Length: 378
Image (cartoon, rainbow, N blue to C red; front, side, top):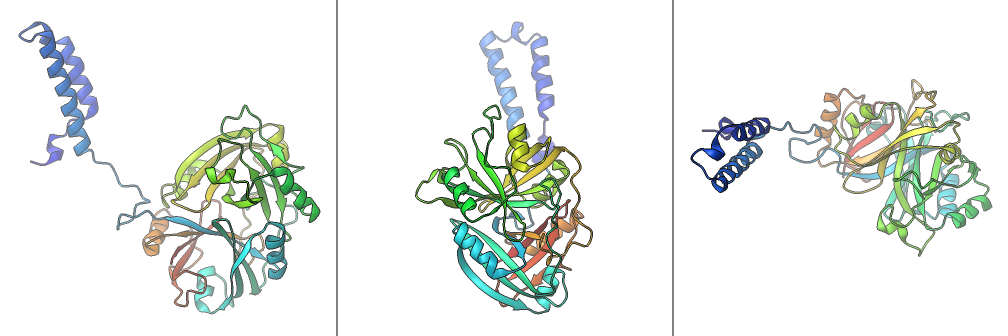
């Protein structure tokens, strides 16, 4: 006999145990101790059988080989206009270290990035345990960063760089004449249980990409973010504006296997001045994989006038970001995104035999708002 044939739903267990009280068990042949013993055994047997036989549908993020579609966030990438200028900014101002510097061309990269005639210079830079990838398209050149971008536009994305001393970090940014995106550093109010005491400031790199420095108070964030031996410590997360949190969860949680690790609703004058959006009220959802920076959803509950990612956006546009997520089976991960009817940028999984970018296979896919994720194998 199959275990399933013995299944007794929990609801049925509750009904039977409740009915037992209404029957004459306790005042017929059984004494009170015997009655309670029999009742306990009934409940336990119901729970055990139900636990053994429950038929739970496998999560779509679990691939056929039993692994999660998304194993780790490897790097957050952005397209830049002048590579040497960007290297100087990230190294001299924010103390990133250059790890690699390669120039690639050919049909494999054209198909991966969804662009014809590609020649690109790709530089990987590291801060603490986390990495960014800067890509300059020597050909073809893309569109400049939209000068009127606001923090609630749907192409908005940033990396949150953790600092050990907000005042000292802000002074350095001012010394280098970095462009403000916030009016100044903001300390989130204590009434906000999950975010209270966090200090944050938005600014922009030479191309116009938004960046954030963030300092956690004691008791918040990972323990490594409390270090004092250096000023710029690493990248905690990359944040993206989403139109609908539940729709985005279908992609990141249900398809790629990210786990939700936190949520809050942020508003008030500090949040408005941080995002530089009057009346800003945000639903924030934090997700993570096994390692690497997290991904944070910023859903603007108000105002709802953020613009969608422009039609025809390409990887060589300066506003382009792509976050690399490593997986053990990129073909199965790509199929999971197809099953979810998410749009692929690449025509399929592309093999990269030279491994110049540190990966052997990859595919670009868009989330529900158009943000690009690169699924890749080492």
